Image 1 (cartoon, one colour):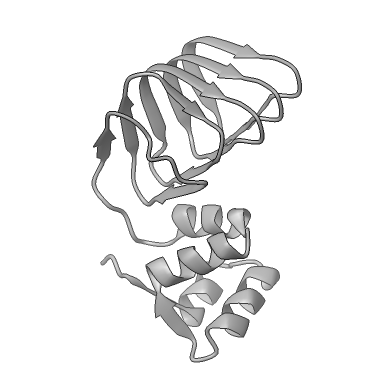
Image 2 (spheres, helix red, strand yellow; image 1 turned 135 degrees about the vertical axis):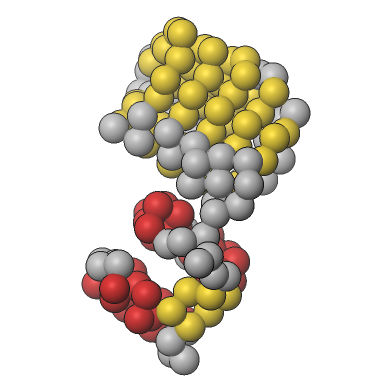
Amino acid sequence: METTTITLQELDEKDACFDGRELFEKHYPEGNADYWDVIKKCVALEEFWNINWILKNLDFTLPDLVLDELPEEPVFVYPGKVIIKGDVKITGKVLTKGGLHVIGKLTVCEYARIWGNTKADEINVSDEGRIYHGAYGETINVSDEGRIIC
């Protein structure tokens, strides 16, 4: 059963790291919090690895999200698959549960970060851009200080 509440008990049961549990207890001493409140708190604290852990390990998934372009937000989080129809340039942070699928060209540059499996017809990673958890495409180009980290 999917839930929109995160509890300390659930974090313990799913073997969340000590630092993540401690952070949760600090901000939610009652031992539970709304899923989106926790995500927003992690964004504000720049705790992106904790968001990635939440997406991967907690039982909350939304249906596929199909977009013509990615919203221009410094941090975009979606607990499901994100499908973008068309070319996209990412300069912020993107965290997904079901991966990012681009029907077109994906450019990851500046200090952009993508957490979650990434698929596109063409992938270009440059500057300080990073893709974590795998990248799949017909053409993949990595230049400058860009990285794909599996």
